[in-house]
Image (cartoon, rainbow, N blue to C red; front, side, top):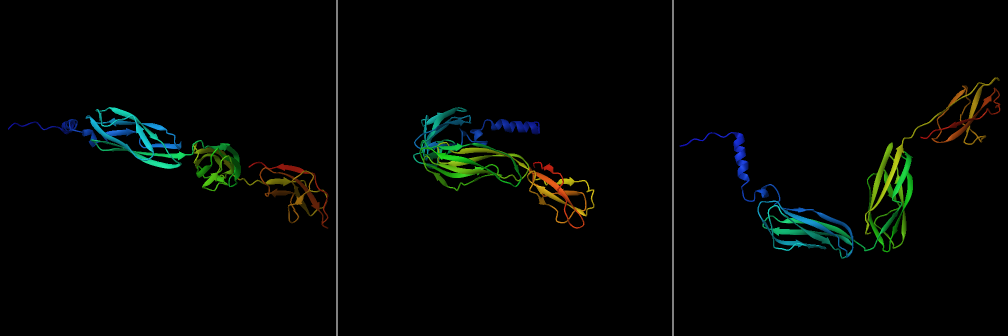
Length: 318
């Protein structure tokens, strides 16, 4: 009996792989024999009784001929440009058209199925039928809120106008929860030729620049409508105005400090009791405001002197 030398592990692996290359229909063991592209197909919004089409390509991924026996489609979809039965040679492709033709307004789904001597190919189909000629005009389509103090809300308005046919709005979404819409209760129908004013709000929760995109889903042919917005949150800062004055040359027991919002008064006293020092810190000021201050002196009998010269203090923003 003849003895063969023992093969090394690498030689054995080579022999196994070489053997696989000659097995019948070997490619099917690693993937779909008949591939389709694209899959699935979504046609988006399409006017009723129109018909956008997509080119669909079937590719034979095996070393053997695939016999396509039937192509079928369900729903409001049609196909053309392919005749069965069809023999598709190894690594060859065939391309044909798949069309969406909605007969009414609404959402539609369907399936295109390719039957052959290999496993079936199924392509999900979907689309939305909308009123022919219907449009939704959005004005403006972009907003800039600038700087807004964290926790505060800034609001601008957008106008939504229907075209020659009524528009039904079913949903409105935002990519950033700091931006919201107000005055839009869903679902909402806008009559033909009529407008709806909606609030666009920005309420920052932290400091820094940010943005969003609103998407408005509706029955218009140009759905979804888009709105973009940008803004920046700025933090709230507590400001303090520090005041000092020269002591009176007369015999006094204290001082009063007064504040006004316009030059020359009127003024309101800030201290509850007389001040014995010649300084005062006003922490009740607001960002972006301007104040005017004066002081008076008090003698032992409680008499008050004339007001001092006025000083102006501008509080920064923020």
